[in-house]
Image 1 (cartoon, rainbow, N blue to C red):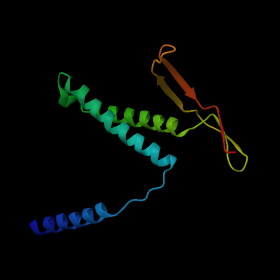
Image 2 (image 1 turned 135 degrees about the vertical axis):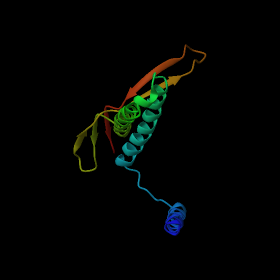
Image 3 (image 1 turned 180 degrees about the vertical axis):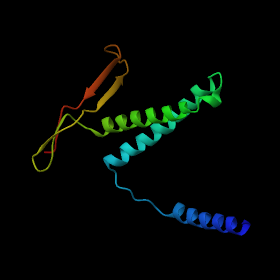
Length: 131
């Protein structure tokens, strides 16, 4: 039994070291962004669920809080990723077709200058195209 465990550990260590050293050339895509935001949202949600569980009277009886937090985090992360990917409400592509999407809302804060007070601006792209 010890030999099998040792062989498996050596096998996984070799595979891990090979894959760790391999360079990754990933194409930036919408799926990658949404998946990454969902993953981070799930991890953050599970941490929040564990923190809420720690304040319960009997934490061992409320382990489902971690799952609920992870599920909510994945959904919130996917929504955030989808909103971040969408560039404008209407976009004209190279073929002349019009595509509709949810516009990205970009908040911007400009500091006060000598002419007036600071301002807070929210931009949303409504039309986008390449000329």
